[in-house]
Length: 407
Image (tube, rainbow, N blue to C red; front, side, top):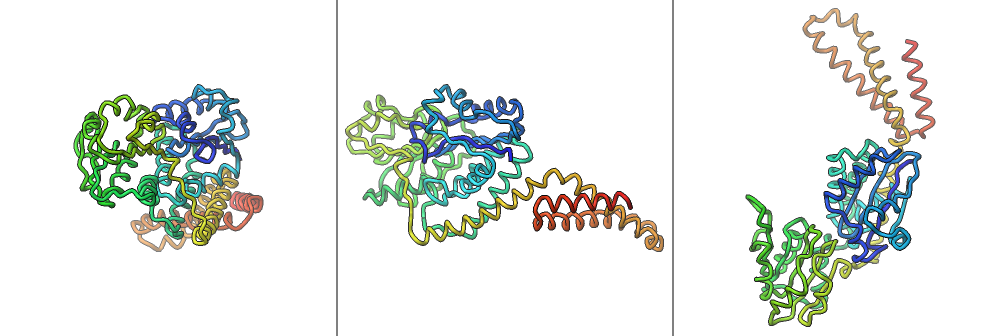
């Protein structure tokens, strides 16, 4: 199997390292275009989130030092950053994608956002003509399996997003949000989740919006909004400040915060990668600064273990379905030929009975019969594929091709 995966995540590197490997949309498109042109590379999908950057490549039998190429793209020394990167291939890469899409490798087990991010990564690769048929099927099967897990497995957690977990952790530390003024910088997915989590706690929430937005801006009902450029003006009256943008630039700096010192202690929460808030902000006497890595909490309860066991069983089924397709994918044209020949054979056998039917009716029925015959044959063949190993199925297809060819 020629599928390979390289990347880094929260289990290998802290936020200060992960942000070096994060990609903007423009950077991701450029890397996929460049790597897609490499010898042997048939498809590529790049996933870049707060907690991970992972690149999936279908390169057949061609081998390359993709970790080295990634470091080169980022302008980093391969030797220095090798400990923060991992490489998987074949079944290992496939299994990791399935588990990751289901949220089993997230800081918050079973989180909902990663599923959307995986779907968006495939869609982005498709838009840039980077994903091939193998990666298309692989990612779709991983998403389908993750959706099944969401439906059938209940993990014992209430907060299934980084935003919800951040608010929950702060509450467990004694913070109270009800009636408090909170500023949320960013109105993307993470910003909206954060604003909603704070509103649910009874906080007074203000969300920043960029000037270039036109028309309706999607922010949670009950939240106020201000222009992003006015964030420092309202910041002194807020007790909690959350930043969650996709911008590669800092949203808050120590220098500017020092100029608008509040008369209260403030908590700053940076949910972005690359980080939005300058690290030196945490050195200010009135500021306490958290980032995404501060809110990891692993549940080892029996209920969680049961949920994980059930999820793993569903993942095994999904992987087997993909493996079956992958090993027999080259037989798809042969299966289509058999279906066409079976439909042609059936229509030939019905030619005489159809003479008794009015020509107009026969002209309507024949295409329907031909199409149905092909579909039924395909269904039977793929049922065989699901039950037999690849070699036995291949033998069956070859026998049927010879049989219909002679007839």
